[in-house]
Amino acid sequence: MGDTASCNEASASQKMSFLDRYLTVWIFLAMTVGVGIGVLFPQVAQWNESLSVGSTNIPLAIGLI
Image 1 (tube, one colour):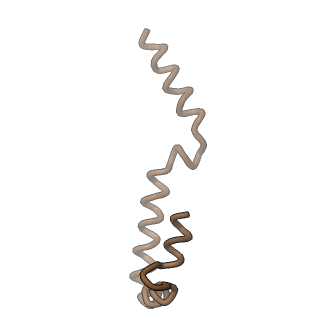
Image 2 (cartoon, rainbow, N blue to C red; image 1 turned 60 degrees about the horizontal axis):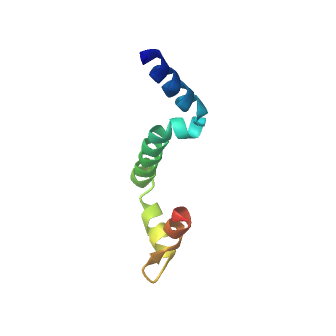
């Protein structure tokens, strides 16, 4: 009975794509890259703010879409 449950779990993880399986890793990697860019290139924050229209940041809006 326990073998059936482990078989189902294995098949569920095998059905996931490579990106889905390691989604947490990609999120932490993106956060690390973002912080690194901010530390190494502080002028990026000013450039990013210049791309705002009113209170809407256009790159952020595109990223959320």
